Every structure is written in structure tokens, then in C-alpha cells.
Image 1 (tube, helix red, strand yellow):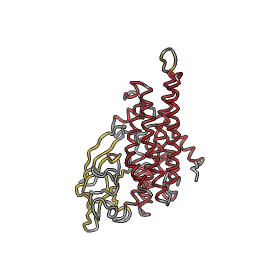
Image 2 (tube, helix red, strand yellow):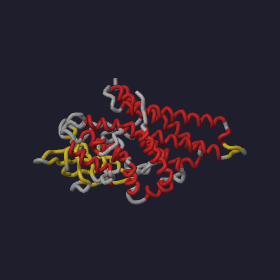
Image 3 (cartoon, helix red, strand yellow):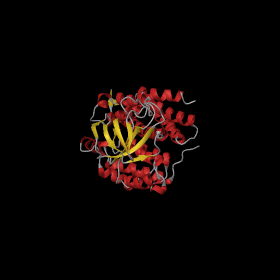
Image 4 (cartoon, one colour):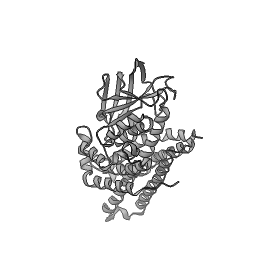
Length: 375
């Protein structure tokens, strides 16, 4: 099976790349990250106007129906631009979860609003003790009358502070680490009993640790007790998506490093004239291309009905992302010298983002274990 980009996908990517080059330079990004909500509402609306928020969703819900292939196109560009806007949190995670598990009414109500830029979402699934185990859910939901009351804690919920609605995983049955008995609920950002500690992550994005103290769920998403498979499907898709983002980050690190080697002089000549440094640049290029191939393979297999092939291709891409982080990020920082780790240079922020991508949805060690258990 081949990964084919349609003309429409390429046009969308070109439009996004041009926008990022013209209006999203490093200085602008840094100003946005330090003020207010940590990103631009105007940029989010521009993403909606360009059609980017509808990339993975079915046409009957107002999307383009481009699926995972379309996400690859967008996420590569997002990686190149170090985009702060909550595309991963709102579209890739929460939006796809609605498409995966939601009723027809929920899809037809929530997805068009998301695609239009009128609704922002977040997905709260991780907990302090879970360590990447999606079934380790201590947060509980108890039915009282025709309502569900949620109590517990959620950790590292990306973009929760600015989300209009939050999808929460909670246990309605079974023991704490059982796949059976996990359910999904939609809560409003202003729900009584919901509070959070908001903070900036190492790569400049925003996340929250949430406390739910008797929060009344607005709606159930999917079937009660049976949400684990839907969560795993969406996390797999998001894992493949951030691998594509990693490709964009690596490409920028490699290009910026090569340009620096061409202009920085030592011993009367450009650093790029030294063969040993040329070899390092080639190593960076090879790592980038291998990452691209594995990211594309993961995208192809996201919907593979063969569980073993799906898990292995996605985990392999994520494992290599962890390996390539050492090759590409460390080489970029070292070849720039001391300035390569300063906040004043964009290279350091690409390195931070690549480090965060390695940790998201399972680090290298976790993915190696998952790969080995896939047979």
C-alpha cells in the first residue's frame, strides 16, 4: 500500500507553509507563547478558514475526509513552524474521539463547530499513576438518576485552559487497571466542581492538571464501560501524527544546522568545509529520511485491521523518533556551539519540541515493550 497525497492535500500544505513563513516567524511565536493563552485566536480562525481543522473528518460532518494521510500533511508543516495552536489537542485527539465514538447527533453538532473554529476541545485521559497505560483509570463516574457525577484527577491535559468542552475518561466499572469499565464523558469548561492548575510545558505549549470534584457530565460519549478501544484507536492516530510532526522538526533542525555550517567560519574557512562535520550533517539527513519513511508507514497502518501490524508500525515509528532525537537534536545543538542551547535561538526550541514528542503517548522504552508484545 502506498501513501498518496492528493492535489488538494498538497495545496493545503503549501498554503499552511506559506502562512507560517510569512506570519509565524520565531519572534512572533515567542511573543505569543509568553502572553495570554499562549497562542493566537486569530491564527486559530485562520486555520479554520484554510480548512485545516476539517482535515481528518468525514465529509458528511463538514470535513474533507482526508483521514490520517491528511493529518500527516498538516502535522509535518506544524512541526516545521513550531505551531502553538492546539491542533493536536483539539482536532487530532478530541475531535477524532468524537468522530470515533460519538453518536450521529454529537458528530453533527460538535464537529461542524470545531471545523469552523467556533469550538475548542481537549481530551483528559492521563493520570499521575497511569504511566502511558490507557486502562489505568482511577477517576470515577457514578450514575445518579439520569446523570453521571465524575470525581478524580487528570494530568497533563493539553490546552484544557482554553477548551470550551473537555472529554474525560472515567471508570464506571471494573478494577483500576481493567480495560473493561472505562467510559467517556463530555464536560463543559465552566462545570461546577472543575478546577485546574495551568502551566507551560518545556516546549512552550500549555497544559493543565485537572481536579474533578463531583462534576456533572454534560453527555456520555460512546458506550458506557466500553470506551477503551476507542481511546486506543485515537491515541494510535495521534502517535502517528506526532511522528509526522517530528519529521517537520527534524527537517528544520537539519536545514538550519547546514546553513549555520555554511556561514560560521573557523580557522579562516566555513565550518562546512570540514569533512567530519559534513558527515554529521549527512547523519542528520539520513535520520530525517528514515523517520519520514516510518512515519508514513505508521500513517498507512493506523486503520489496519491486523492489530499486530498496526501496533508494530506505530511503535516502530515512535521508537525511531526517540532514537533520532539523539542523532538530530543533539547534533544540531552541538554543531551550533553554546548558542544552540539558548532560548534566543530557535534551534533550542526545536530541540525541546523533539524531546517532548519523544515523551508523548509513550516514550521509547514503553513503545519497545509494546512492539515486543504485539505478536
